[in-house]
Length: 204
Ligand SMILES: Cc1cc2nc3c(=O)[nH]c(=O)nc-3n(C[C@H](O)[C@H](O)[C@H](O)COP(=O)(O)O)c2cc1C
Image 1 (cartoon, rainbow, N blue to C red):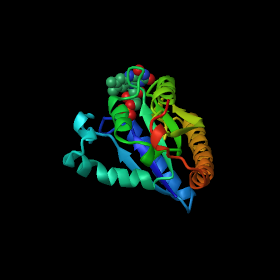
Image 2: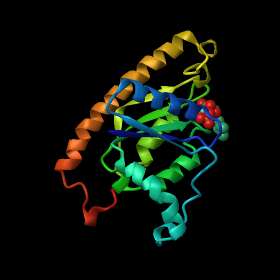
Image 3: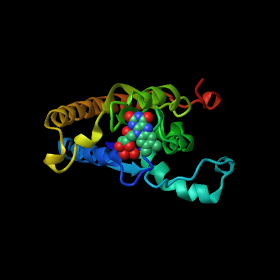
Image 4: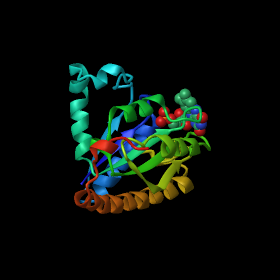
């Protein structure tokens, strides 16, 4: 199965991308049947949504075609969101304007919030409230809030806080196993259910 990891920070480098690469390696090392793929929003690879995206604009089609393919082939997602002024970064919300139920619909997603301090709750609340209505992404009940992120998951062990680093590594590994379980379960749901309805193309 393919799991796409979306790193929601515009910064380059960023702690979110550090976390994305760690999760990519974890998935590769721990699960023989998972092929991870990272898409980072570093340096804003996607321009802001504009009306021409809905008007068969060739430039947009070319830009989005490879992404649409990767996302529609994915069975599950990890959405990594740093907390920026108590919000999800604008580039991540822009990402959710570009893709729809054909790429994301009825597929499980694990939210990973990132904060350099004690924050991280707001991105979880925001994503759960407002990023899935039309695309029907299924956020699983398990979530991760990586607080004091600069002190964990670093390659050099001396840069890590031994106690919190160990806890988060264990917790991430467990959460990824839960995501894999949902991925298996929801695949069969999609295969056995008519999930698309022309009349109800958008959520309520
Ligand atoms: C514009 C901006 C606003 C931020 N606001 C918050 C915030 O409201 N709460 C918080 O916990 N951290 C905040 N931070 C710090 C981030 O938690 C920190 O940069 C962390 O490394 C995650 O972001 P990154 O993935 O871009 O590195 C902010 C960072 C930036 C760049």
